[in-house]
Length: 73
Image (tube, rainbow, N blue to C red; front, side, top):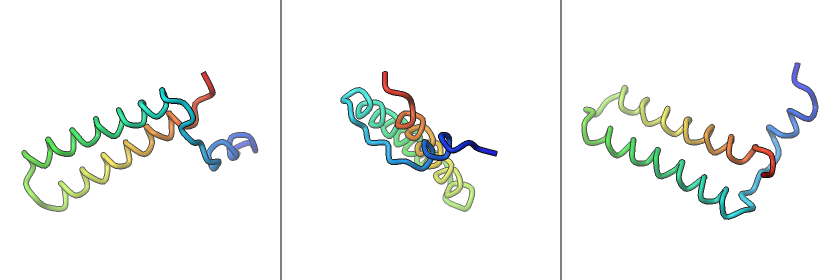
C-alpha cells in the first residue's frame, strides 16, 4: 500500500520552477521528438508504428514526471 506522502507526490502539481528543470523537460521532449522523427522516416505506416509513437509519448511523460517529482536540488 502506498503511503500518503507518496500519493501526494504522485498526484501533486510539480511546476518547473528553475531554468535547469525547464531545460531538462525541453531536452527530454527534444530527444523523444528526434526518435519519433527518425522512426517516422524508416518505419512503414501501420498499427505497430502508431504503438511505437504511443510508447515514445509514454516514455516522454514518465521521464518528465521523474524530472518534475525529484526533490529540490
